[in-house]
Length: 239
Image (cartoon, rainbow, N blue to C red):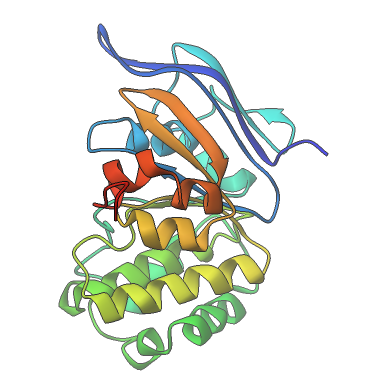
């Protein structure tokens, strides 16, 4: 079976500076795949290229058997790719309900049912549905950003640093919800600074350094690899 998402020999440049170099990556339907790497490694660039916000100078982005690397972002969303960007980027002066409606702007019908599904995943958003997004806590804003992306009915969800800046208990809740979203049938490509949490959640992982994939394996194997433990988990081989 062909992967749901496939990147082939992908190169993205910012002017003369290469941000991604010959990237090959696959995400199978129903998987959670995590992309690990230090700041500046190219993780966010990867997600933005998949979602049509950047266009590669070389290579292929293939989704559900279709080459999409030249499509604009709004067409990529319509095909079934949702993107939760780093920093959440909700609309702070719009209510929770209005933010969620923006996620469904290309769809007709069933919006109310979809919103109730989001409130089922994130009950606190249902309690605050009339509250402006900018008045929510950081964790609630992250939940709103994820909920907004789910309103487009994505078959693939791109998550960029969903735990950034959040308290440990909130992070635990967010990761439980991510697991539930996958169980409900959505495939996930996850960029996450908390490598331990990401690898415990994911099926497989890739390690990105200076725009190149340097390792890929099952999440369990990467979690116990001494090089990964030293570089991303803050552990030494002796520990």
